[in-house]
Image (cartoon, rainbow, N blue to C red; front, side, top):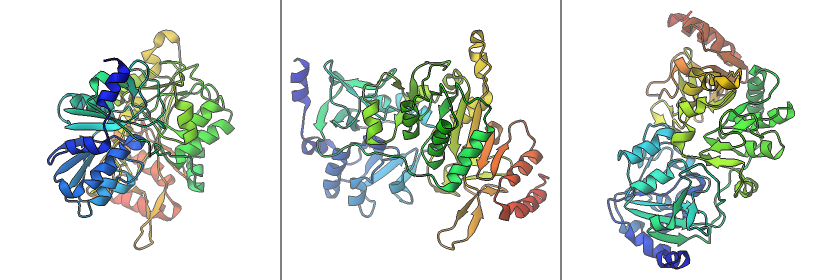
Length: 453
């Protein structure tokens, strides 16, 4: 068969392929914007016929219809390394503590596997390839582990150029379904809060001048968005990107000519990432754009690969930080809230390697910066009381997402505390300075009781 005949041969209705799902199966249903949304709705319609279906996915940008149909959580169980908003607090959602960059290896080693892999892809090109679009992460490895491989073609998915593992050929696919009903979800910029703006300003103030030839790693949220905006206003030039996530803020910096990649030491000219989230305008910009390069997570988040970049500025967030610098970005006590993501890999790589040693012949004097950001306080929803996010010790049951030995800077709206190279005593004093003023005396007293000061 030629490619068009092969396509028609494998093209099925969603009602046909969803019948392949049988009780007890594992299904990889895609991630982020690239969940197989049509397949999800078809699963929801079969809810009464099924049992013991286990779904593997990360951070879907919309609530899953199959979970909504399963009112009592008896049919579908979700296994994930990063919880989205619609998955928190559900008894049928199970958290797998793992760095994002390790997941491709885990699929290839057989530690993770699925019976059916299905996710959103782009339309097929003239050579028979489907592109994994804005979610490359561990997709190729997941498809390799699957017994049945299904692609859900969506014309709204941009074709994202990549280094490797960004495509699958029609010869490797068992079934094709077409989604003409949905556009992939967007995550546009939102206006940062005043606290988020102040945290971003404190990051900028900690960076050396001029703001040139920096390589950015930023994630989702108000602080990264505010940081990107301030960078442009501060006259930053010739920035590069090597980042787990390619964000709306980065896209706007590229459009403004601030991100060029010309002075990157590794893969110059390429905005390296493993997934992208943004507006429709950004997705259209990504489509067949040679300035971007999507790679699997085990490449992008490999600490050695990260360290090949010069002048890295890495920004990640936290839920709470203790007075020695231990970072919890995963849970509220034992209750899971988000996940590890790539934070540990980035803080380790940025704090442990000097990029100039990786490329000594180029003569770069490279200095890297890793920032963990958080507001100084939060309000309890039930009592309305205010609590500090800088704490004497982490809550019992909390995950330690980033070890204190890898932390460089902790940033709140009250300043940036440099922890690298400092003793526990010095760390406690620095962190108390950037805590909310209402809690500084209390934290000082607790630090004395713990023997820190």
